[in-house]
Length: 407
Picture 1 (tube, rainbow, N blue to C red):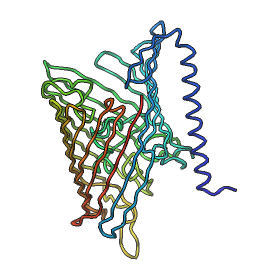
Picture 2: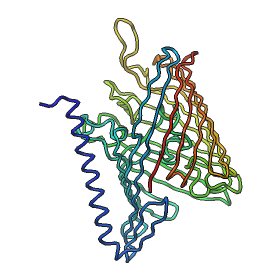
Picture 3: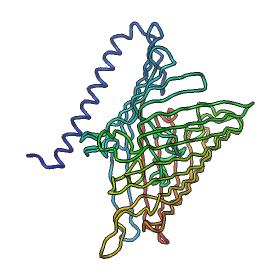
Picture 4: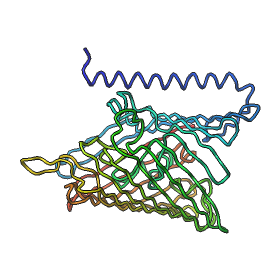
C-alpha cells in the first residue's frame, strides 16, 4: 500500500508523462505534415504552421522559469533558500476553418503549476490544464470565448507570467485576484477618433479551474471596461511588463472591473481552500498602465468584500479565527525604465489591508528589481530584492533570481 504522499506524487508524475507524450505526438504529427504547410516560425514567437489551404494553423510555445529564492527572517535571524522550477508551460494556439474560429490550450507541467489538484473537486486528478477555450470572432470588434481561461480581472493578473516586469506578481495579486474560471466571455472594442474603448462581460462557474465535481456555489459575473485615450499600445503593450516597444508617443490605459461571485465556497473565490460555508464575494479593481520611450508605470487598487462576516470558523477556546474569506483592500504601484542595452531597473510598492475581523496581518512590501531582456520576454534574466513589513515590524528580507527561456 502506498502512503497518501506517495500516491499524490505518482498521480502527478503520471499526468505529467501524459502531457509530455501528448506534446511529443503532436510535434511529430506536425513534422509529418510540414511539407504540405507554410512554416511561419520566428524567433521568440513559437513554432508556427499554417496548412496549405489556409484553413488550419497552430503555434507551439514551450517555456521554463528556473527560480532561486532566499529569505532572511529578521526576527529569528534564520536564512532559508531553495531552487525550483517556478513555471513550466506548454501552449498550443491557432485557428480552425479560418481565422474566425480560434483556439488555445495551455498546460502547466511544474509542481507549482499542478498544485491544487488531487482533491474531489478536481476529480482526484492533477490540475494540469490552465487554458482551454475556443473563440468565435463574430466581427472584427466582437468575440465570444467559451471554455476555461483568465477572467477579466486586475491588469497584473491578466498579464502573462511570461511578460512580467518583476520575478513574480505583487502581494495584491496574490491575495485578491480572481484568476481563471470556466464559462463564457464576450469581448468588444470600438474607437471614437484616437480613443479606444473595450468592454468584457463574463459568466463563469465561480470556483476556479478544472472543477468537475461538487460545484456548490452559484455563478460568477464579471464586467470590465477600459479606455485608451491615446490609442492602442505597440504589440499589445498595455498587457506587457516593461516598455520593450519604446513607445514613441505617450500611451495610457485605464481599466475598472467588478466581479460578483454568488455563493463562493473558496477563500478567495476561485482560489484557496474550500470552506464549510458560502458567501457572496464582491470584488472591485481599478488599474492603469502608462508607457513612453522606455519608461513604464502601472498602478492597481483592489477591494474585496463578503456578504455578512468573512469569518467562517473561530477557535471556541481562544476566539482566534481559523477559517475566513480573504477580504479587504490593496494597493500596488510599480515603475521601471528600460535602457538602450535592454537592462531595466524597476521599483514596486504594495500595501495590503485585510478586514480587521479576519485577524490577518497588514502587509507592506518594497521591491527593487533588475532585468536583462535577451530576446524580449522569451529569453531573460530577472532578479529582485523585497523587504516585507507586517503590522508595524520589519519581518522578512527576500532575494530572488529567475531565468526564463522559451521559444
